[in-house]
Image (cartoon, rainbow, N blue to C red):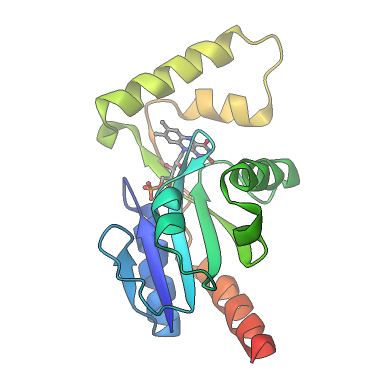
Length: 177
Ligand SMILES: Cc1cc2nc3c(=O)[nH]c(=O)nc-3n(C[C@H](O)[C@H](O)[C@H](O)COP(=O)(O)O)c2cc1C
């Protein structure tokens, strides 16, 4: 049995998780409430927050010794740029034990951010990040995008991108049979 889980602070990861669940007719649950007993594969969606993925530690705690894992990161940085996808992969590889990595695949999707809905702590973190970027001698394209969109509402969520993910999951399931 396959289970889709998510940990979503502002809703983007949950939207993607529910869309994939609808496409593949697979149950979807917040990782905190998920019963993972007897599950053969977990597909987990989580927002990126400074290089960590929401709910990942909880997933690793609840993962059975042979359970396969698919991680879907949801973040603002464009994963179509290889340097962004590589950075996320490397950050995650630091957290996931070697033995679990052998049965793990990682996908990336783009999320959303509405500054008016951020918690005071997250607002402060974004303010500090902008101060840091303003003082940098050289700004990357992504740095500039963070400054340009500061205080606004950005939404890159594209539920259609879940179709590619669904196809890839179905393809590898056929191969594993
Ligand atoms: C404090 C903070 C830190 C963030 N760090 C990152 C990051 O390191 N990389 C990234 O791509 N997006 C980052 N984001 C953007 C979130 O990943 C994005 O808003 C995502 O859609 C959140 O998903 P969720 O609503 O499911 O929690 C950050 C957002 C906040 C508020």
